[in-house]
Length: 424
Image (cartoon, rainbow, N blue to C red; front, side):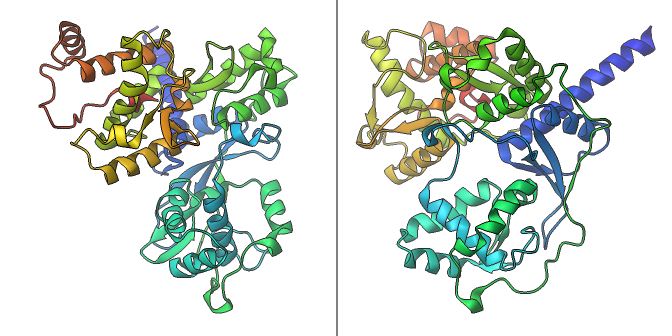
């Protein structure tokens, strides 16, 4: 009996570690390939259930071996959704990425990854000549594309990132057909030399082919692809198949081993989010968490757009989005503890993460990523606002005691304690 219980505990631990590995991949795009053996195999099996592949990318240049998460050849992520609902690059980063791809991949008959090195200056010059704002181009090269895993940066030398190795064959073929349309730098700035990857990327294989216990496996994987790549909750009219209890249960069953869960908003729309235990584990590892300045700026946005309107009777529900209470940068900058430049940079990062949205008139409001929280996580975020808004109150003291925080942070300092905004 004891050995049977030990085997069950070992299997449960392996399943959780596999979900944690997939959580790291979703939160950061790339993670170390140090995890091998049964955990990697279990992660690959769980990923296969939702149309994903775990790819091991062997070191290129001075890079270490890493794992990335790709899509299989059948599952098209949200191809029918309106562009406003899809996660993707904005126009300038898209142009910069196209120029990077062409510079690293001059010969389309070869595989795009790893390609050859190329120079930052050539990309900046080319995109500037094509009409892109130079500062926006440099920002895409320094932050947007590296964070997406599309390029890697080593000083002034750039390379294609590990995410390119996870492109399915159908995507690579599409890129080959459109290769002549990619913006090309000057001939002497092209990537040169042979690719220096000794071992090609390969997929981490599961023990056996994973199949859903129903005939609608492709439908389930397509639904999950839509939800996982949506920038905001998907209207239920876009996913009518989730009205079927059998398909909905199959989606939930497929998401669970990956540490994800299916959530429905108050309006009946659909979204996915991390399961609470996995979110706690990621926070403990400081994977995908916000830095102190970003947390403080998000707290200010929520105070101005949710907490204060609620205290005045103008925000009458517990949701973070849904009411058009906004705040300007000038109003946020009245908090003198954070410079206006740092606040503007933090708002840019929060917008990219979906935690803050911006209207066409330059006003800010809570972003769609807040809809990915479970009810328990949402309640904890409300408690965070209490700690920020009235730290000396009795309710704040009770919250600190329950969380094991003995004293509030000194006035004027940013707390390093992870808050609920990190658990999303």
